[in-house]
Amino acid sequence: MYFVMKRIDLKQIEHSIKVGDVCEYIEPNVTEDCIFYFEGEPIGFYMTKMPDKMCKLADLANAELRSKNVPKSEMKRSSGLTSNDKSKEVLQYSTIIGSIPPKPHMKRPYASVSSVHQVKTAQTFIKAMLMLAKESELLIREILPKQYELQVELFKKVNPKWRFGDLFTSSISNYNISAPFHRDNGNIVGAVNVIICKKRNSKGGDLNIPDYGATVGQQDNSILVYPAWRNIHGVTPILPTHADGYRNSLVFYPLKAFTNLD
Image (cartoon, rainbow, N blue to C red; front, side, top):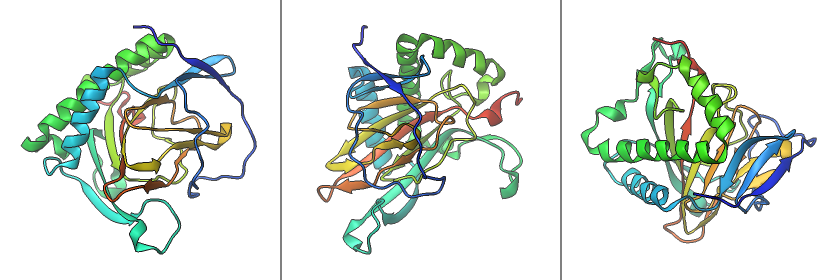
């Protein structure tokens, strides 16, 4: 398969945004299929619409996540806008699958696999997500072959039992969650994340990277491949345009806690 993609050369700019700051609403300025370059090297890419097979898998995973089949950690709060208007509140939840790193501060000094894997009704969701991860890997291999080879090399230090696919350890699905600015410091340096978006009757929920003045538009069935350890980034407020509006992100990521771990 051949993809025509625009080249975007990212340039570092000055800003005052810090980790923990709330990401304000910004109209996206990255809205076309593109490959991101920094200092002459390709570091990620964005597609406004994934190949059909991936879209179907994302549709299935999204439908399963939104059903009662999959356990979720739920909350109800603002979608990201600073407002006391209760009508702006939306149901938010997240689900983690794949490997969970040790958390000694929570009295769990050992690695484990998400308990969601033990839930029978969640198996369709897990299988769809695993297939989606593997299709994402094939896409990375085609568009960023050097990155693919690097991530394969990095994952030689990750025991297969801790992998979700071949290039990731874990996955999180965030429904209507607008994340403040943060950096994924727990990720394997040199590796990339995958963010697949499912969106309906809503605007916003786009990824802002202030170091480059870039806001990537994340519409329905789009995919963003990016090294989330490299820069701080945040998600713009999610603004439902109808009562049933939402934005769901299906994310695959590689945690360094699983390197050289038996």
